[in-house]
Structure formats: C-alpha cells, structure tokens
Length: 502
Ligand code: UD1
Ligand code: BG6
Image (cartoon, rainbow, N blue to C red; front, side, top):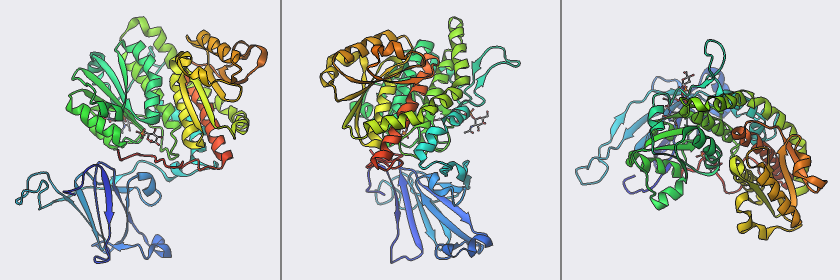
C-alpha cells in the first residue's frame, strides 16, 4: 500500500498462509459481509467448505465485495471498509487495521505500526427481491418497467399538496438548511459522467429558469483535465447513481479543496459521494443492476426538478409555474405507465433497425439531453453506433450525413422549440432523410404532413418533465435492439456498472 498509487480494492491469498485472506482498499469500495450460519443453513453441504468458526464457536461465512448487491442474497450485515484499512481474515476471526499517514520511524509515509480498528456492523437497507428479475427476462427490462414505482418512491414525502398545507411545495430534507447558500451562489455547476451527466443536462433549463442562478455543466474527467476554475461562491452538484465513480469522486475532492459548497445527488446511501458531500439528496430509485442506467436516470431528473423548485421556492412571480410542475410531478408515474404501452411498437421499430450501422437522434431545449441519452442507450447495449445531436447544430455539419439510408430520430414533442423542430423535419425531409419522429399525442399530422415518416406518439407533460417521458421509448428500443441482435443486455461488452478507476 505504501507503493501503490491510484484507486484500488484488493484481496490476497497465499498458499503459504492457508485459511487467511488479506484485503485492502483506497478509493474503490469494499464491503465485508458477515453471515452467522444457523443450524438450518449449516446442513446445506455447499456451506461446509466455506464456513469459518468465530471465536465463540458459531459458524460464520464472510464475503468480500465491492458492491452490496452481490452480498445481499447472503446477508444484510456488513462492515464498510475505509480507505487505508487492511482487513485480515484468519480462521473465522476478522481484524481491521488502519495505517495512518504519519511518518514512520524509518521515514515511510505510512506508519509501520498499524492501529486496530473497532467497527460496528451496518445493516443493509435493501431486500433480495430488489435484485430478483421477477417476471422479466433481464434486469434492464425490469428496471425500465418499474419506473412508475421508482419515480413514486423518489417523490414520496417530498411533494406537499393539499391538507393543512394549502400551497404546493417541495421539501428536500437533505437540503433545507443549505438552500439560502445555494440561492446566493455565483453559479451552480453540475458535475457527472455518462447518464448522470445527461440527467443533469435535462434539468439544467428548469434550474436556470426557477433559480435565476447561472448553471454550467462539467463532465467530471474534463473538469479534472483542465483543472477548471471552481470558486468558494460556487455550488457544485455531483450527480452519480452509484456514488462511487472515480472521475466524479476525484472532481469532488478537487472541488472541496477549492472551497465550493458540494451537493450530492446519488442513489446509494453510504456511498463515498453521499458521505463526502456537504449535503445532498438520495434519489431512492431502488437498486439498479443493469449496467445501462434507466430508472436512475428518470429519478435523477425528477430530483433535480425538485431541486429547482426548492431553490426557486420564494419567488412569488413563479408560483403558478411551480405549482403546475408539482401537479405534473404527481401525475408523472401515470404518464410513464402510458408511455410504457409503446413496448410492442418499439420492438417493431427495433426489428426494422436491427441491421443498421448507425442511428442519429436530433433534439433541442429540454430534449437535447434526451437525444444524448437515447443515443447512449442504443450505443452501450445494442452496440450500434448512435449519436445525439443538438438540432440547432444540424446545419453546421450533421446535415452532410443525411441520405435515404441513415435512420434519424427527431424529438419534436410540444414545447417552446416545437416550431423549430418542425422546420428541422422539413429540411431533413427535403434531403430524403429516413425519419422517425417522436411527437406529442395528436401531433402526428403536424409533424409529418403527407405521412412520409414513422411517428412515435408520447403523452404530453410539463415541458421540463417531458425528458422523463421521452427517454422511455428509447430505453425500450435499445433493450429490444439488443435482445434481437443477440447481445448481453445487462452486462454490455467492455462496460461496468461502477467505474471505480480513472
Ligand atoms: C431522510 C432519511 C429517510 C427518512 C426521512 C424522514 C436517510 C438516508 N434518509 O430522508 O430514510 O424517511 O429523512 O424525514 O436516512 N446527503 C449528502 N449527500 C448526498 C446525499 C445525501 O450529504 O449525496 C445527506 C443529506 O444532506 C441528508 C442525508 O444525507 O443529511 C439524507 O439525505 P436524504 O435521504 O435525501 O434525506 P431525506 O429525504 O430527508
Ligand atoms: C458507467 C456506467 O460508465 O458510469 C454508466 O456504465 C453510468 O451507465 C456512468 O452512467 C456514471 O455512473 P454513476 O454511478 O456515477 O452515475
């Protein structure tokens, strides 16, 4: 450990030390699961080889893992291992040792004499059912279809309407003591990677509108590469499903050093980002297992819309707008149920696109993020080249790609950018583009006069919530394309759920 650099979680065993294991970590997560075996379980022969005897003679089984999901089917009791610690398992006994950073006598940066650490067991707050596939074939499919429920859980207790409370408001327990500071910030900086970055991008316009504070976007690795300026007067919002992504974590360390207020938005209670930010919001979407993020994405957008409502909460001029959004949030799970009915339609579209090399997705305004995220879903699971394009940039390059072969999805649901998207469709049509248009229910004739394109009709919701609805058909399309093309849906080639290395 004295010599290693970067993030790691390692386990060692040696034939010279039978019945012993050593594990250590820095930066990457590591959990030790502890299962006390009762008589019933001990009778199962599978456990006999692996069992340990604890000091009081009770048989125990121990698990080392970087993710609670892998442990939960065995035990809920875990020890969370911290950076710089070494776990020593020997014949059923567990000891944790901590090397502090003082100079040792021989001048080493880690002291030679480690201190023994006492730590109470933590109990995981999740159920095995959460990691079963239920009636679905794949986790990604299950997670797409459970979005009405995951969104309901995300909003539970946080939206207040009716009863003694006449006004419609939002209460984010984790942020209420920090709202004044956030409102006074010079700017709000969103920082994340992959899908989490896209979710922040989807929420950016409503945060700008309701807070009046400038909002900028940072891909975590790019902020680090540039060592971009971060100031004490900034609020930095770290968005991460896992709360463990190395790039986002390093950006958090960098931002803390620069003195900004750090807010976390994560799905994982106890994750490093949840622990190391000053405050934050858990999205409570439930455990997400499919590598391609789906339900966490929609819950992240909803939490950030609630963040915008909470920050803008004291402006009277925007009360009507805020209340309309809150009503929209209450109704959102129903709208997601409705859009999920497009499953078969998306399967048919997938059959049509199965042999394509490439797919372009044009979006703008609230749905620029949908274009990026829709393309990312197709790319990461269906292994098909796909690109999300800001429709306003169409004439500055992408138009050169348009011909009668390349399939193009244009997102043209009803919002302030609708007429601009109509004009984009006309221009693509004039160049014989092979168009698939996503529009609000009832708009098919106005987005596709003459019927020369395929139309996906989705329910209309408040403009800032429309990305939550619009991403669902893309998730379904990516899922079906992947299955039809015979690829692994839940563990796409070369990708990992938590990227804990840089
Ligand atoms: C909390 C409880 C919830 C309980 C509710 C009752 C937890 C995890 N949540 O939810 O079980 O029903 O009160 O009022 O115990 N935080 C960060 N960084 C992050 C995420 C969160 O610092 O990235 C902090 C928050 O500032 C807060 C705490 O973690 O102090 C819990 O956050 P959250 O679960 O979002 O709070 P509540 O919704 O109030
Ligand atoms: C990985 C995952 O690349 O990390 C993506 O494969 C995810 O699905 C990205 O969006 C960021 O992860 P997180 O946990 O920080 O949201």
